[in-house]
Amino acid sequence: MEQTANQFLGQEPVGKLMKKYAVPCIISLLVGALYNIVDQIFIANASYLGSYGNAANTVVFPLTVIALAIAVMIGDGCCAFVSLSLGKGEPDKAKKSVGNSVLMTIVSSIILCAVYLIFSNGIIAMFGGTVNEETFRHSKEYFFYISLGIPFYMFGQAMNPVIRADGNPKFAMISTLAGAVLNMILDPIFIFAFEWGMMGAAVATVIGQIVTAGLAVWYLCSMKLVKPAKPDFKPESTIIRKTLTLGLTSFLSQISLVAAMAAINNMIRKYGAMDNIFGQEQYAQIPMAVVGIVMKFFQIVISIVVGMAAGCIPIVGFNMGAGLRLRVRELFTKLLTAEATVGAIALIFVEFFPRQLIGIFGAANESSYYTDFAIHAFRIYLCMMIFACVNKACFIFLQAMGKAFESTALSMIREIVFGVGFAVILPLFFGLDGVLYSMPVSDILTFAVALFLIIRTYKQLGTGKKEQHIGELASASSH
Image 1: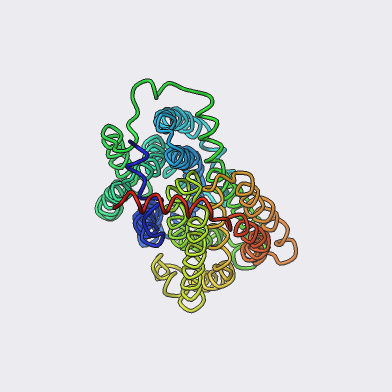
Image 2: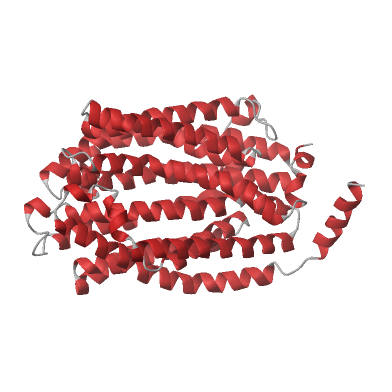
């Protein structure tokens, strides 16, 4: 019965399905990204926090990404597993994947929360928080409260793709949107009215995360296509291994980004100290604050890119499981075209309107050095946005097809080999600018590898005999 309920994924026009699933996913991810971005906007515009608060937000941001990496590994892996299982007509396995995923999320989130609280000082220092005393103080305050919310954050993020796999992308969007809207309402109250500073920004975020997690729990109790029973929550090694394997690319994509951010933050701290201007105590936090802001804009764009690709996971998984390869190929073409378009639009913004972008993040309260470096950083760091968007889409699409090795390898090459490697090597020759050059160089070289995989994937999806037969059966059954 579950397969029949999901059969429309193999019958409706690909473009229509893409809109139906991708748009809510994009909104969900954008809203999720806004948690940290909104915090940074309000922090930046609070005169008593300013660039010190911005720098602290930049330090803590990669630590929230670690939590997200674990959550999306479980959630995206479950989403892919459920979609493939339903496409193959194996609903029992889909139910077990959901049950085991809930269990894995709860256990891993509690462990990570404990690690963060126990080793907070060392972790903050590892991500560049010791650039100066004021930045460290703000980082520690913000990190403490964010850590308390980790279990709620991870649960909401992990269950979001699971809800999409159950055929309800709109609810996945609404649950995330509810928490983010509450965060946006509470941020100005806590930061400006109550003057709670970094604590206020963090507490507003955690309250929003609790709301999202609560809505996810409510949905799990009334799922439509996949309704796990009590036995499905019992750990099963085969199911756990398959789920985590399918989600490994999502994990590595995020966790490798953390490694790159750690390298970038530390290179900024090291080479910023050698700069004539930023080597001065009162300006030392500016490069880290600025690069953090540039990354936040990039995160907004990537949320759209990942949303489009991740929204297609249930469609790709079902059609691959059902053997409808030409439909998957058509979807791949539409996705790559859309991703390149998003990258082109974003490129126009960073190259022609960087001053307006930095103005959103409190530039009026800062020195001219802040604005000048920000404009410079936007134009260099994000100049290869089109390639970055296509690369990210390729990672996720290959994952959805069940090509875990290719997807994982490409992601690791981008974030670890190139991302970390160039962030460490290029500053040796170009100083602080070398950190900025690391991003476009990495994206160009990754695209060269991705292009090979894209061409090969098109060839592998070029057979459509079985699809024609299934299409005829579906057409006949509708009369």
